[in-house]
Image (cartoon, rainbow, N blue to C red; front, side, top):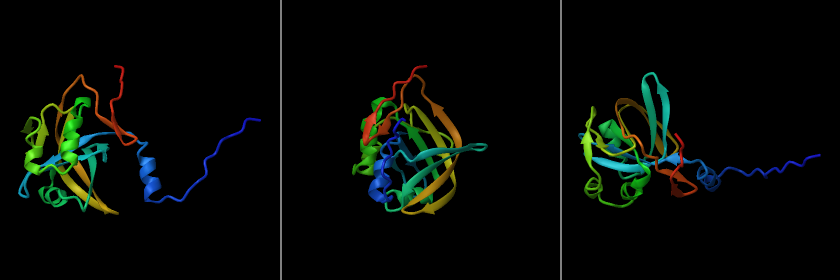
Length: 171
């Protein structure tokens, strides 16, 4: 008879949850906004498709983040999915770099919402925030996509097991 190895179940606390989530690979994105509250941006992997009718995605943002109020007030954002060679932008937008210096890196333009669009991002989703929901420490922004910009022929920058990695995709 074949023996089945079973892991011991443990109570889910913050540390166990974070460790588990580190094994859920995700694309790395720079989320940007501009509007009455100013220009801002941060790095996030908490981005997910919601529906294609109408095209909608979600972005999660910690309410204690320094950029939170800017995003909440502007109600527009752009999800710029980074290509494998753009880890430096993830670090700049994810760290303590002053906001004006963050946008000095990369080439930026605007589309429908006027949120900054990284011209050589793998894909950019220019969005209007249509609803938000508070869950625990974060707000979930539901974002209707108003415009898309694609760059072909690159692999995404992925985050897995607390490190950047590049998927090796075969077309």
